[in-house]
Image (cartoon, rainbow, N blue to C red):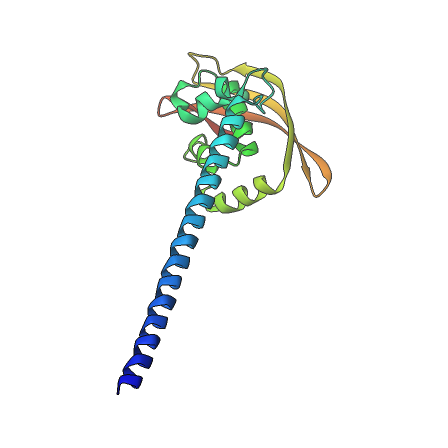
Length: 180
Ligand SMILES: [Zn+2]
């Protein structure tokens, strides 16, 4: 009996040890996960910070946070049709699909193509924007046009979107209506 009890005690101790090791490993892996998460979070903050401080993709010689970022966080602040056009280009560069939808007139907004547009804009490399001509679309106007060329690389081939776009005000702010 004594012999058996001793053996059981050993098994129990062994089990406890295994349980303890398992718990310890779980704890360790949780710490590892938390560290990795923190690292990823920090990295995304740094990427965001760099993005804010980088030259704005729209071609204006300004940092993003002093240029299209202002439109991206408050579309109501956009003063001209050209500014809105530039902020939409930057939104394509940054794959900000929500802004692309928001800055589109409700009557022509391509809601059903949202996923497709997002996938496409992420797949191409945006090269530059050239604004060729703006007419009307100033601070107190209600409509205007902007002719532009947007260059991008798709599957290694440089392409250009050349469009004369029409912009109008909807809900007090500038939105893209479509091609003239
Ligand atoms: Zn800009």
